[in-house]
Length: 289
Length: 287
Ligand SMILES: Nc1ncnc2c1ncn2[C@@H]1O[C@H](COP(=O)(O)OP(=O)(O)OP(=O)(O)O)[C@@H](O)[C@H]1O
Ligand SMILES: [Mg+2]
View 1: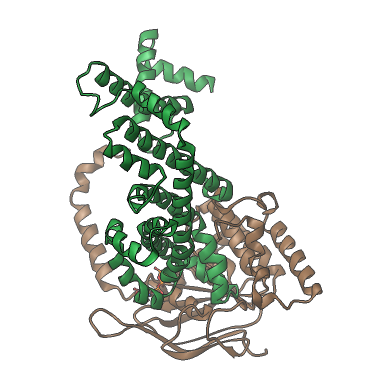
View 2: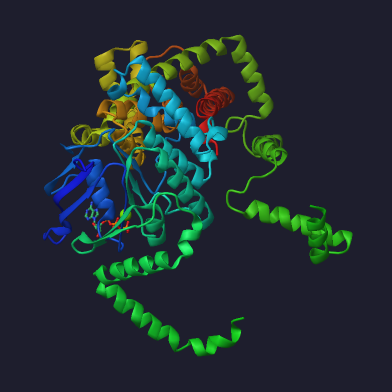
């Protein structure tokens, strides 16, 4: 295969802490994503998933190492890397359609030829239809449900044809049913899109269902713990989640996350809590249906 | 719907008296619930009552001659005074006052809004301008009168300058705060779509804080009116504030009342105008 679309090479990120000793959030992290690949990144809370994505987006700078997209080193945010956040970032003062067309008005796209402009327009239309947004085209974001808003966010990030789409728990705030719909929508969408996707989530099932590869990050400091290739093609249905191989893989990945969550204090807290609740629970027993 | 009401009736009450009590209880619950909407008719009646009650109280006080006419003229006296003033140039006084307030306010907005935007957006601007702005902000505008006379003279400029000084520093702080409150994620989204800093400033910061800025201007327009009397202390020979000061000299209490009420009404009209503008310009602010 040719050069990777995204490569993260020896990247570290330290934050200055109040104590003066810098906290190492990411340490010497290497990873690649190739063309048209859908990579999911999972790991315990606080292991640095969002930090990694922000570094790739160029919204933050690594303390060490380099990140390349299409062979070029990342020095700041740019339209070759679209980003979708957990919280909607649609501009409340623009309608859905105006949000989709926001990047068209920017100087980076000013020199587009008329052919590119008409392509852009038809691409916006196509995305609008593919994401089922035609009906809400002229609505303002605050008139849409959370699931609809995230659809527009994804569509908006894809309109400019980014080399890679970065998604940080995009469905984290949605209910289970909406999430499932979104999963199938994303599978469908990425069957048609040429974009590489990096998808951060804390939901292992979601990660396996959507991705070609699942990367587990270990915490304290954040680094790659293990990489799990997902053996199924892109044509997936919800039934897959019930299959033995799927469930086994989910168990394996969950075990890795548990093993690498370096927060011992939390485990101790949990144990002490279960010990405490066990004692009075005998008196509560009678009340429960 | 029928089934639902039937059920509530069944569980709440059987007799007619009980039902009325229940309805009454529901209204009370609605009035005590925070932010709950109330019927429009009730809203308007309450707003009118808010004006009429003090008026009735005032009428009662002056009718009983509990307070001397010098201290509290009756509503009829005030009405007479209004008609008299109307015949002798109330409109001219009001016009010149509106001109001064609007000119001082516009100038303050023209300078204060961009300054506030820059202070809120760029840390170096904040460092350079915010401390000095906060320092001057606490100085009373009336204390500037001698300086303004010295520097601007006693023409129209000095009255406009006092109103300008009264509000410009407030506009700067409030606009800067509005910019700082704009969530980072909007800026980050714009950057990831390829926006340059100048574009982010224009398309995100400016567009995103516009509704708050209109609100800030509305509030400051109100404050500008409160500086009118102070401004017209400076060698004026017309204007509502001047007329009030003049009436004070002749102990014409009724005219003072008229002046204050007219200023209040004009202020209210401006406030309503700003609210209407806000509603027109920012349909996306209404949920
Ligand atoms: N600006 C910052 N200054 C100091 N520490 C930071 C900063 N940003 C993040 N951190 C720390 O870096 C660590 C990783 O944060 P990050 O948000 O990347 O984790 P995450 O894996 O996305 O967690 P979650 O699953 O909860 O979203 C956390 O311990 C956090 O406290
Ligand atoms: Mg995160």
